[in-house]
Image (cartoon, rainbow, N blue to C red; front, top):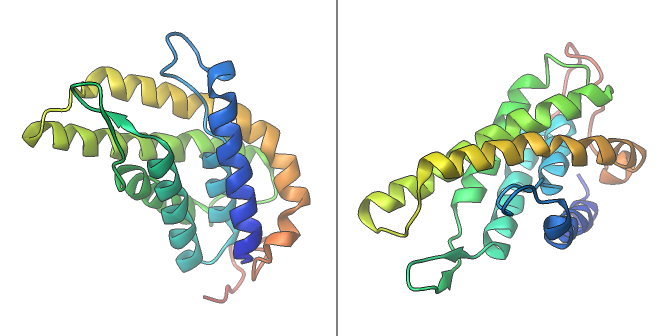
Length: 188
């Protein structure tokens, strides 16, 4: 896989996430779609497993470092880890499903994005909920999980919009095999 193309795509997706968050948010602002998630799902559908894990880890760390957490007292802190772990587990779900789906169908990206997003957000909520047990940061797991799961479902819209550009530019990623058949032999 071309890491330069991945970095450029991830940078653009993160820019869309941060730039359009205020425009696309629902309600009080806690629910917003993710443009990074469909990119990670797309890479997870076509890249070798080790590459998928590293790419998801990088995407999660970038999200962690661009999303400071507000702690009691009004200060903010960067907490690297929860989104990185969540993205890695979400990518593993997509890796497991890739032999069961039609990779060249837009429905695949559209369906796997909210499912992977749900796994990602459950892991993030569990990580912050576990931290709340020993270091109170004012995190309420129940309402936060609901908002995060709605955000995962809302990420279908970016997946619909990004499917065609990602498919057209997919050859620039330089994936080793097309994974067009679940019976194909893949190089790892």
